[in-house]
Length: 121
Image (cartoon, rainbow, N blue to C red; front, side, top):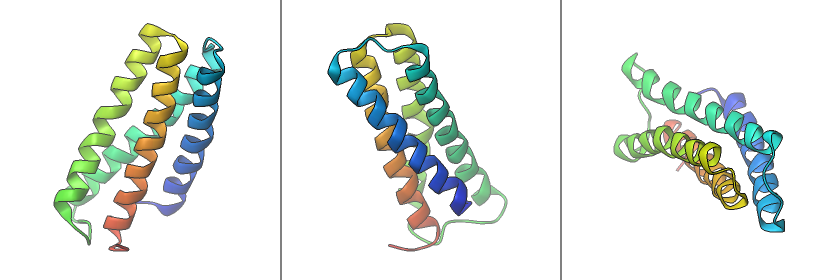
């Protein structure tokens, strides 16, 4: 896993997630920019999940607990698409709040995967 890519994702996820949660809690209806920024974050996190699943297959396994890492990797691939689909279909302030919370959740999982990958636990 590339460290700078992980940090860029985490910063984007926190900023976009915070923005979405605040906008949703204030009561504003999400606009295309709000949903679009969160969709971009979720796509970056999905890319991280794919990278995390491909690297062990090519001979670079995580140094920490592989089972925990695998659970996080699968979750990173499942949570964002579900949140994005709901936010795009529903387009309400609550779907935006959930999408923002999903960005935070997945960011935490990506950081934990990084820790497991390099055995920083």
